[in-house]
Amino acid sequence: MNVLITGAAGRLAQAIAAALVPEHRLRLIDRVPMTPPERTEFMQADLLDPDAMWRAMRGMQAVIHTATPPPDLPEPGLARDQELLELNSRGTHVLLSAAVDAGVRRCVYAGTLALFREYPQDVYISEHWRPLPSLEMAEMSNYMGELICREFARERRLTATALRLGTLVDEDETEGQPPDPAWLDYRDAAQAFVCALKREASDEVHWMRRWTMVHVGADVPNPRFLIEQARHLGYRPVHNFARHWPAREG
Image 1 (cartoon, rainbow, N blue to C red):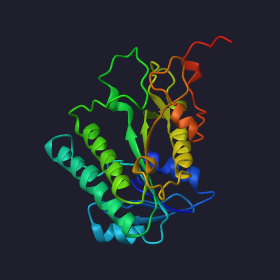
Image 2 (image 1 turned 60 degrees about the vertical axis):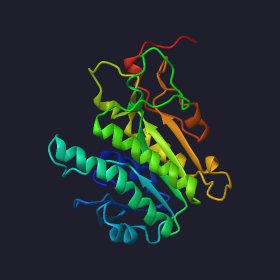
Image 3 (image 1 turned 180 degrees about the horizontal axis):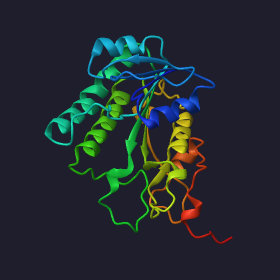
């Protein structure tokens, strides 16, 4: 399958590319120049440029939108917030418009489980819970991007899957840190994208079958976020931070 991946300079995109490259042809895009991973194609392109997105989408069959901010954003402040809002809202719309025009039938979006930060720590949260996005622009604009994906699935014959990811870390780099039930290893996140990419429902008449959102986390004791829906996609987390948790009984 020919797959476009956004946010090429980010660690998430590179983990996804490493998981997909053995079986897929990959085109990675970002607005900053970079050296692409082996056996991938790189195109420097801005999400806000409709012509650039059209060129990037040509010949693609699926798009993975990591919603990763480019590394050249301004320092924290109003200018940064404005740019994040523009990228995650209008940029997502420009990207998916180009995808639909190019005949792309599958989209996987990287959302965030930070949407549930305001809930108590002692509850189990599934996809049925209502998100409570904060006023932090990175979080709120990411959620706006997810809603734009949902609306494209409603209006177009597009399979759209939002993966709400936990806090992305590398398990090998968490030694000495206090355990966090929201941790998710980059490699397991990439596995979830591989699974979601197999989902094809673009010919379904009812739009709710074209759209789904799934929570993705590690398999930890007493999880805050339930991942049964991700398991239905074939997700099987490997990096579960076992050394940070007491041994399970049985």
